[in-house]
Length: 240
Image (tube, rainbow, N blue to C red; front, side, top):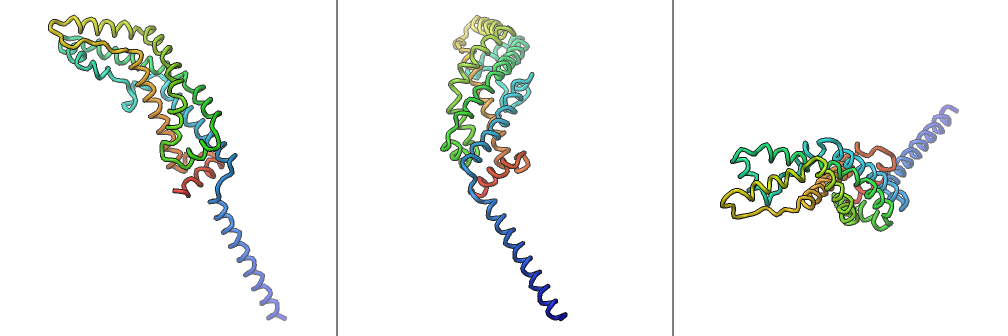
């Protein structure tokens, strides 16, 4: 009787162990299965919504552009010779103040970006979602840039113009260009379109920040703050 009991117990344990092993294998296999189309779209929308909101909030804060060397808007490069000349004659503070005000204008303009990004996220198709998920490290950023840059320019430019006027950056630029152009024997005059320059630089900085957030969620599992994000981007990892 004891032998029979021992045999039955052993078989039962082996059966349970086998079931448990199969269950674990099934779970492992399931984790690598392709997410549903709905999962992909919802996961990407969640990730892109968080990423763009963080980027916009970061840049629209005071000194969001000015204190970040990656996105800070410098004195216009094509007029850098003028900045040097102004510094040489003791007007360096004028150049520094202008650069600071230029970034203030970009920070004001950045506040307009979030609804435009949100609209682009809502318009995302099934093919868009799959291509972004399985694309390169900038796939989502490239999607946004293609879909939104023209709209962002139209939204940014008037606000940057108003902001530059409000903080006297436009007048300061006129002072800088007038003073430089009045320097005797100046061969190269300044004709920079300040609003266009500031708007393009502001948008470049915005997409740099969006790309940073995209890279985080693609490379750092800890940045995937929900089960859906872990599922969707875990699948993307398995396809590399």
